[in-house]
Image (tube, rainbow, N blue to C red; front, side, top):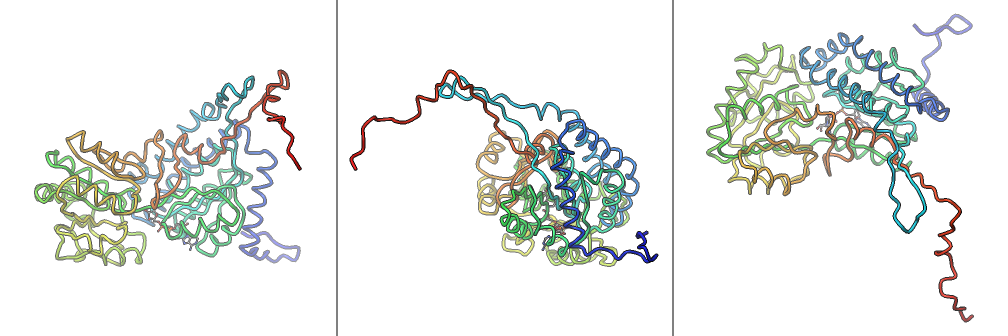
Length: 470
Ligand code: NAD
C-alpha cells in the first residue's frame, strides 16, 4: 500500500528517474560511510542472503516454473543450489581471499615493503538475463557483497515472475544500504546506464553488451561482460558413444536449450555421426520420455518471440527426432530436436541457437573441427569427447574459448573454484568464488619505504654533472 499524504491521498509514485537517482545516491552515501567495508558486515549480509534464499525457495521455484517451466529439481540444481553453494564457499574463504598479499619489490627499492590489498570498488550495477534468472542475478551479487560493494540489481523483464520474486527476496531480506532492486526493461536500464557506477556486471547477449560497454565508457566505468556464442562439441572416433550421448543430450536440452554454455552444435566424422545418432535419440527418450511435452523435467521457451525464432531455425527435412510438427506455440513447447546433414551455411549455423535444437555436422576429423572453431568467434565454452589425450591437448592449445570441458558438458559452471567467463565475443572478465572477488575489487599495492637510509638519493639528478650550454 502506498503511503498517504497529509490530505489522505496516496502519494503518486515518484518518476522512475527520480527513484533510480535516489537509489544510486543512497547506495553511494552508504558506501562512502563505510557501511560495506567490515568483513563481519559482509559475512552477515551473505548470511542474510542465504537465509532469504531458503525462506523464499518455494516462491522462486514457482516463479521459475511459470517463466520457464523449470522443474523443482532443476531449479534446485541449477539455480538456487548454485547460489547457496556460492554463498557457503565465499563465506568459508572470504577472510583468506581478502588477506593482503606480500609483494616482493626487488633490490632496487630496498629497504621497502609492500602488500596487495583487495579494495572494494564502490557502487556497482548488476544487469542479468532471463535464462537462469536466479543464479545469474544472485551469484554476481554474492561477489559484489563479498567484495565490500553496494549494488543495484536489475533482473530481466523477460522472466517477469522471477524478477518479481527476486525483488521481493532482496527487499525483504537484505539491507537497503547494501542492495537495491530496479525492475524494468529497456527504459529503466537506459536510465541506470546513464548513472555513474564503479563497475557494471552485465550478463546477456553481445548486442546489448555493446550498449552497456558504450554507456560505461562515458564514465570510464569498468565492465564485466558475460556473453554467449556458439559453443561447439567435437566427438572423436573410438569414444563410448552411449555415455557421450547422454551427457550431450542433458547439456543441450536442460532448460530447453536456453543455456549460455549449452552445446550449440556437434561435429564428428560421418562414420561417428552415423553411430552416434541412434544413441542421441535413445538418450532423448531416456531423459524425457517418448512424449517430452508430458515430462515434468523438460522446460518451456521463455516467450513466443524466442519460440518463433528457434522454430524458424528448424528444417524438418533434416530432423531425426523432434521438429516443428510437435511444437505448441500456445504452451511455448518446442520438442528436443536433432537435425542431421546440416551445412555450415544453414540458418541454424548463423546465430547462437539458444533453444532445444542440436545440429549435427560432418567434419573430416580433429583438424577440420579445430579449423571450424578458429574460423568462428571465440565461444563461451567448447566440448571435446575423445579417448586420445593428444587430441584433447590440441583443442586446449589450438582453440580459444571461455572454458574447455573434456568428457562432459555444463557441470563445470557449478564448480566454485573455476573462474567462469568468456573471451573475445563471448565476454570479458570472470566470476565465481575467488574470481568474483577479483572482479569486484581493485588490487591495490600499498608500498612503504623508510626515509633512512636514503637510498633514493642515488636516483636523483644531477646525473651527469655537465652544464648545458645556453
Ligand atoms: P535479456 O533479454 O534478459 O537481456 C539481458 C539484460 O539486458 C536484461 O536485464 C535486459 O533488461 C537488458 N537489456 C535488454 N535490452 C537492452 C537495451 N537495449 N539496453 C539496455 N539493457 C537492455 O537476455 P538475453 O540477452 O536474451 O540473454 C541471452 C543471451 O545471454 C545469450 O546470448 C546467452 O548466451 C547469454 N548468456 C550468457 C551467460 C554467461 O554467463 N556468459 C549466461 C546467460 C546468458
